[in-house]
Amino acid sequence: IKVLRPDTMDESAVREFQHEATMMAKVAHHPNVIQFIGAVITPEKLCLVTKYCRRGSLLTALQKDRLDERQKICIARDA
Image 1 (cartoon, rainbow, N blue to C red):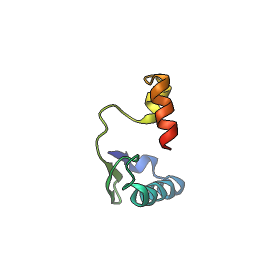
Image 2 (cartoon, helix red, strand yellow):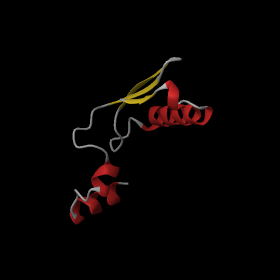
Image 3 (cartoon, one colour):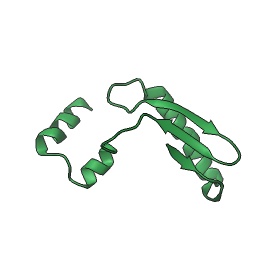
């Protein structure tokens, strides 16, 4: 769950959050994209809910060098 709290919610952050939620809703049915569950928007906080990914994000895996060359090639080929 991605959460934005009031102290971090300026207009730009809210627009970016809304854009991210919209894009996730459009592409979440693709087999290579994490499943989008929904978004919660209240004056107190904004929440983006996705399926739990036990191994973390692809970005984290790439940054921490958790993937071998074969895995990277497979991911690139599927993109």
